[in-house]
Image (cartoon, rainbow, N blue to C red; front, side):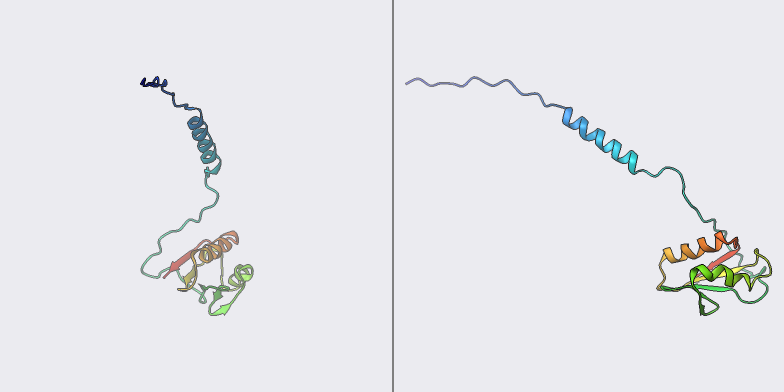
Length: 127
C-alpha cells in the first residue's frame, strides 16, 4: 500500500489592490463630505448684570414652538423686525429674547438670524 503525500502548495500573496481602492474611496468620500469654511455665524456678546442701557417700551421676544411672540402677541417671523421697528427709537436699542421651554434651538437661531438681517444687533438672550 502506497501513500500519496500531496505536495505543499505555494503560499498565495495577499493582493493589496482592493485595500488601496477602499482607502482611496474613503479619502474621496471624506473630502467631498467635509465642509470647508464657515457659512454663517451669529455673534453673541455677554450681557451686563446691571440692566443699564435699556430704555423705551418693552421689547420682549419670546420664542415658542409655534410663531414667536412680541410682548405676548403672536407675531409671524417675517413681520417681527417690522413690529420691533415701531418700538425702537434707533436700531441699536436693546431687544430681549427669551426661549420658552418647548422651543428648539433652531427656532431661536431663526429669530436671531431674522433680527440680524433686519439690522437689529443688540439682543440680550435670557433663560
